[in-house]
Image (cartoon, rainbow, N blue to C red; front, side, top):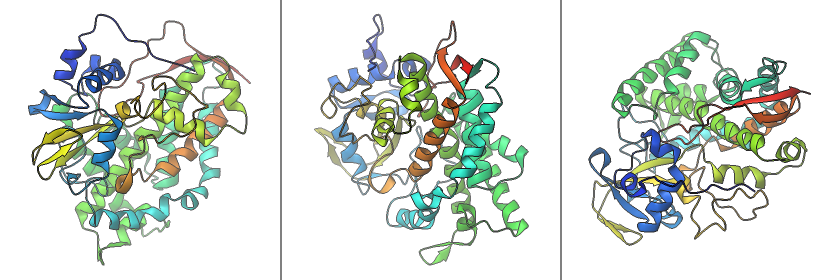
Length: 401
């Protein structure tokens, strides 16, 4: 349905040898660069950040994700590693990682998030109404980002302090993007904000039977959570809630603006999970995360040493022709689709059910109110550099329905 062509005049070999997710040019050609890396060696060495291994093939990414004892999350999964404190459950290994999942799962299961559908729909409607009469908007900055932020703040976390959450949103938008040398400072600021959110809830005495209550009053391994565990867990919930779903929505709307007939198709009530999975395969909201090698091993055919760092590139794995036919084509009729956009195994994305619900509602409510969505004249689309792979902005024109 939609494909991407190779760009002439780009030194892909240089980009592979020094593969840097924070490099703006690399981000604009990420699928071409990683395709070149995979064709050379699916586990290839990059000289960036002191040296690490870039993993671009489906089989090898899956192998690493399936073996947490060898490919550990315990040193942090962000890249490069600038953790101020670990963020459970994503930065923990089993068995403690499973305890945090057990604590949080009830609040992010399908049943757990279904009760929020009405409130999410109200936020989507209000967000669209803010610009639906203008005839033009940036569907990232005017819709996807504020919609998902409001859902996280008001519905999932029950945070009423608007200024506090705006601070969280501002710093979260910078983490794992832009200048990596500032990553530690950015994470420290988010840590402070997360602690303030927890302190406000505890001081209020309010109970909402939500994930913050679980952090404050729940247990892991038969004990209460430590201060660092509570704060770190809330940090990853904020980061995931603010960045991933808005990237997925922006990616879908980009295709709507470019592919004839797609808008009408998605306005139908029966577009399916199958199609959403293909959108997610084609442009995963999280492009890559890292693991640390705990013992000498072999990944695919590449020998690795203990303490080596591997960057598992989910976006590249999702374009591996050994797993997916016509991998660089968006095919909404694709059947079997074992994409890795939500991860795999123990660390499969805990917010996937919430993300799917927000995408379903967000697409429906936007398309119920505007039509004839087209890229604005002169629009230049740029990908965000960093471990994400979303679009920085999406300026469009439309008609109010």
